[in-house]
Amino acid sequence: MATSALDLPEGYYAIRDPHTPDLFSYWRRHDAKTRRGTRPEFTAWPPKARTGPILYKADVPADLHGRARAEWVNTWYGKHRAPYTAAVVDTIASDPIAAGRRFAALTVRCCQCGRALRDALSKAYGIGPDCREGIPAEILALYFTPRVGRAHADHEAGKAASR
Image (cartoon, rainbow, N blue to C red; front, top):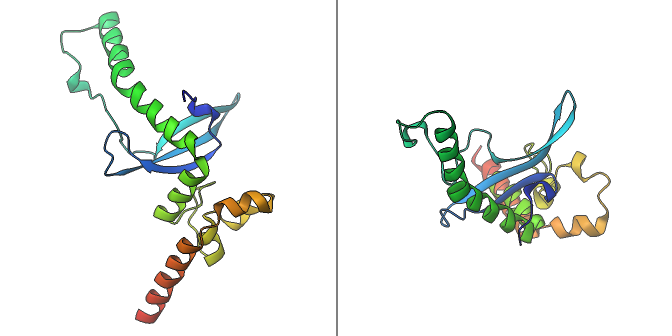
């Protein structure tokens, strides 16, 4: 598919990790505000999460310095990290709404802004009330997951009964 991460809509996503398919990885695409305007970013979530192939200082040959070290690191990233990131982006781009809903269902957080979801309707949509404003009903219907809403309601009822 060869989609750029910057072409993805802003939001939070959960996908089966391409590097470790039995785990989910979480991602955030947003426009970071800078002094000069905005800068698009695509990062793992939460911010300090380490997913996929990671290059540690200890992995870089100690005898490399300067330009040779930089070239070795760039080659490593091109061979290991870039294909992983491309697989993540392609997976999200194939169905960003489903990836956003999955994020909301697994984390009980808004797939638009990442805030905790508190009311039953927000949990059913996976989008909080502030983020739902202005979304056309036909688009919002794509996010509605009644089973997730029922599961959350049952969970809340169980918590209330145990109090």
